[in-house]
Image (cartoon, rainbow, N blue to C red; front, side, top):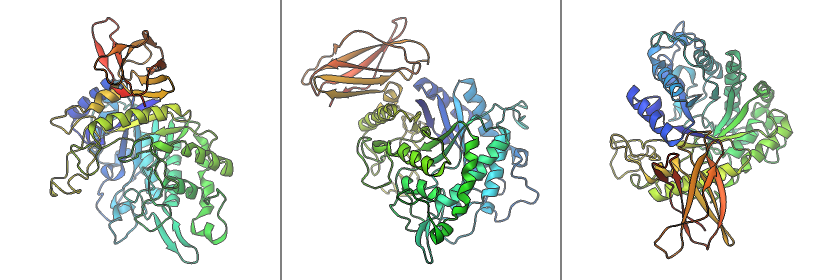
Length: 495
């Protein structure tokens, strides 16, 4: 699995020094790729205006204010220098002039124009094709980006609306899957036109939770429902007919055949469990969290079989995941110890599934609270506190920082403990040496268990089993190649 991290505040909107510090920390933790939201309205001119600027060509990166690209240009250069892959996620919300009009709070995500979005993706594809010369920075060709995702969390109203509506003669239906379908087609065609057809391209980027049925414009949809509706399939994976199909614009499903032109197509998903353990399933039908992540590739396979519009055995990339902590967030967080445990457990669950090719951490630093609200309110803590480090300027490591760098999971199976881990922080491709230590229940002392483990996997994964009674505590110890130092994993209890 590829180790992905996202922290837009640092990488896309921070200062150059903050960006490089964040990339250096990520590299030290073992991050191999960074996911970055390419926010349409942050790049487009006159984003708050109702009318498109006269003469503006959204497909030309040179027509955008040059300074709007600067942070992203700097990022792709700095990441390349550190051997970290960049994958860009062009998404809304877009400029006001590229959205439909509504009088509700959903204006910023309301009916984005797929034609204008396609032009935006063309601009990004051209700029990061490896051929485009930076007009106001280095004056040199910008590095190529060869990993993309199209839109973000289309099943959430904050990113795309209306999610649902009542249609006369049909009833309540999901709308956002059909809006996303048009955006996806436009984005895919744009990437193909700009020389990115052979790149890794992810679709979906779905959120894990939502409502069982389409209730209204602002009600999120569960990903299982969203996926079926995007391909105009009902709960039994049968095609809609008649008025039900007409209301869902099912004639447009055939346009998804553009996806067949991408040999490296994958599906992106965000398997958050909120405050639940990654081993505890959500009760909702069509929810897809880490605990039931196998339901996602099964759904994709059914869609592939029914429609022929997706490849069989489509790879899945988990591209956003994490746990908020308390402290600092008293409303949404788990303890810092649980954050470390749950992140390692999530990695292990993802690693076990043969169709999953990445897992992700969101984010590196906690986001400062919204100080315009009372300190004891949920609005004050509305920002994400899921970092491996506390917010700047303190930037203190949580236990999850070392747990992320050196994951360890212990499972008790009969008279044996099965141990899984990863020397994530160590350079890929080099053999590493790890020793396991165990502390039996009731004991205060650590003892070496078994011999030295030579870790030969290119990304540092290892697994083994050792005889032990249930309830023992385990840790792994990494030894410097020259024996000058050691590093310890978190302590994991085998249950």
